[in-house]
Length: 325
Figure 1 (cartoon, rainbow, N blue to C red):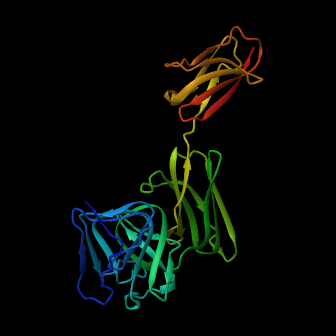
Figure 2 (spheres, rainbow, N blue to C red; figure 1 turned 180 degrees about the horizontal axis):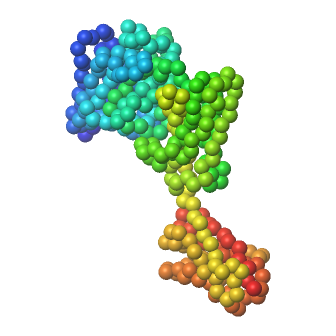
Figure 3 (cartoon, rainbow, N blue to C red; figure 1 turned 135 degrees about the vertical axis):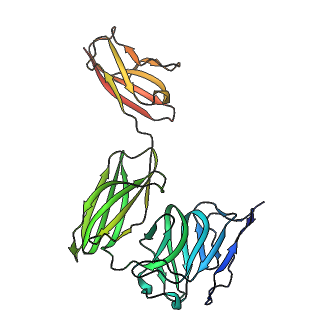
């Protein structure tokens, strides 16, 4: 049986010269959605049930490399952890390691070092966090000043318009900015670049950018911006998520039809019923017995406009007009 961890704060925020460790056994710790968990100053507020099992967490004063390097407090797990929700950490001002506290961002590492834009810093309690809207996988977490960022990102939004994902973002400042990579993923782990958008290079005013993704995947779609400077340094935006239902592409042939009309469609197994309707919406033919025929005989119908309606197993419909000659 798993042990439920409501709050575990080990007093390791004092200065240390040796590595401190915290281990979990086979039963591990479990945190339900919305539970605040703190392990040695590393904090979690999961958006999905979260557990840590058979892992060792190491807290080290050895900074991760960078310009400037990270703060001198790095949390490392001996094997990767997957998490979505609020990820944060406490630190001491003596651990800033040359970073400007107000410019800190959460940084995590698995195979590569990733900076998460939009982190919130409390300079009174010396605490930083970021609300992750999509899952990440990491083996190390710390905080770092990213140096002179190529852009100051005001907002980044993703909205559904029919079967299209419309992305919009705005900047209020750009210095030596080179380009934006619009990146997409279906699992928030494996990313591909959809488009490379040229940045303004130098700007001190409000700049707007947009991109439309015309072929999102069925299910979850994750989007982020990779903001790249002229010297090829970069930072990532917050991840945005959209969900799309299965998109079906259907066609009738020949159209206009003389006797028979064929139906071409991917995922034919998802069709529950095929109907032929006249222009007034009256059902003339209906087929629901499997296997469904991909052909409709219209020989005995008069010339005019008809509609082939496909009813899917999930309750959605697709309708295509056909002309009978």
